[in-house]
Length: 445
Ligand SMILES: Cc1ncc(COP(=O)(O)O)c(C=O)c1O
Image (cartoon, rainbow, N blue to C red; front, side, top):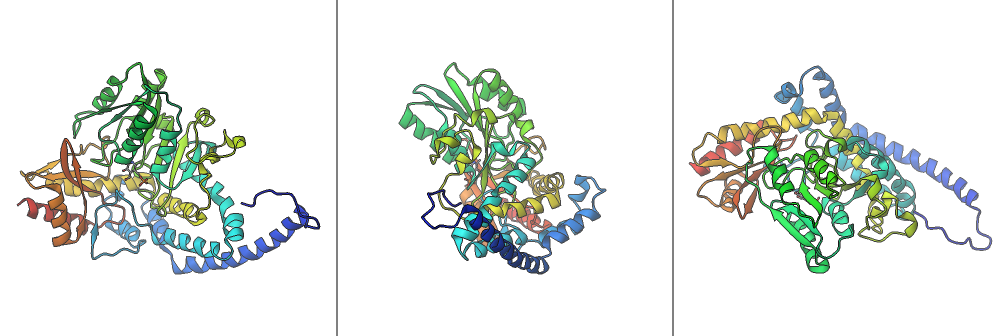
């Protein structure tokens, strides 16, 4: 963005600059339009996914979940190394080709003259991305800031809230390490109190999760912080129930949705939280280095940004995006990821993810030496599942999966349990899931 400054004597008027600018812009759009058309011919991934979706539009998501012909089209939209089986999509995900091409295209455009092409042409289009993300999440665009990841989004809320010494934050001991570290820093720096509750895995009911958190509230509690879905076992929390009760008691809710957005269907109205942070480089399959922060409208003015912004911006959600120079390519290519995501449809996607998860989980749970720490009820979980081979450390199981079968999974070692976290994605094939299940049987054997 160009900064306003006093015009030098003899400088062109703003109108002249604008007119010249529009001419250049037209020429530019002509050039990039041609580039985009060429890219579209070279990459019909999105068109194929949309065509496949039309063919199954009258089927229920659960039926499409088992339609390999449909998912083959989706699998083809990625440029993957199929000599390895990536079952760690909980960390960060590959983007479909069409998204990655958009990212590269925007980087190329930016590099022509970044002060112009990136700041003047690409950067303002962040507003289209904001509008579309807000529509998908179900909030107003004025409540959504685009961030570089979920950590940044959540830390804006965690570090931007005014809390006095002795004020309490209640969370769980299964929340994400970095987010717990962030609160711990406030304990050391600001003298707040942090209470971490524990809960069983798998929990017997969603009520139990809500009751455990709400029972920990004391008169000093100012904030509840918890995951929409945990990264350790993929446990989904009854967010609305907890947030409604917290609001009734005057307590703010910070919800860690790093793994939730574009993973299974919901909207902001189903949550009722005050602050929400998510990654977009996980389940939305957007470029690496993308996320968003939702702040309930009335809380925007009082929440301090991590990187200070001008006073005049204090009630503008964009104050949370004042991070200095950064690539426009990453956040603009989110638009392409939304196209791809909407091309599949969230209901179909969640059904397929559960289908893939159940395929290995239903087979392995028969095994005497295997324990599944994830509650497989659809109200409790979706793609993510954590499984233990009893008697063998999770790190060793993961090492064997890699060394013998070239399967990537991640070890989860918590003070109260351990296991291997398995996260397939829309590009995962049945053969890959079956290879994993057979490998686990062999290790447990
Ligand atoms: C539950 C949870 N919260 C927050 C994060 C941080 O996400 P990001 O890496 O996008 O900052 C993660 C990352 O895996 C996570 O699993």
